[in-house]
Image (cartoon, rainbow, N blue to C red; front, side):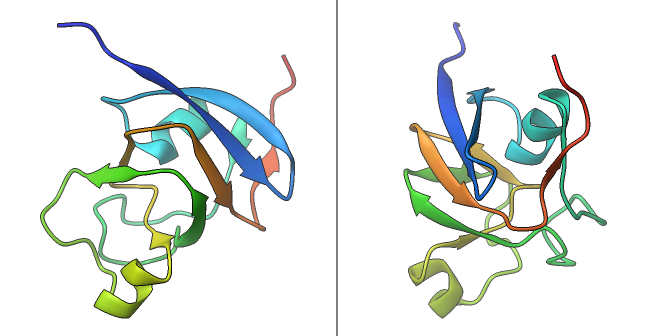
Length: 100
């Protein structure tokens, strides 16, 4: 079975990276040389919460630590989110830590 890859654009950095659909967005972001706030990595602490401006994600767990209203307003938890399309994510505290 092949893995699809999607493009993730990270705002406000206006940086892009490839995200395979079998790896969480947080793991992919870190592998691409970026750092963002995170803690539990299992969808409960909400440290990594950010806003999905465009695209679709799926989750590795049934109901991540988001309220119904937060989900409806586009908030996601990258530690348990998987890209299902190209994405635009607003993550103000992200920073680039590695320059390729």
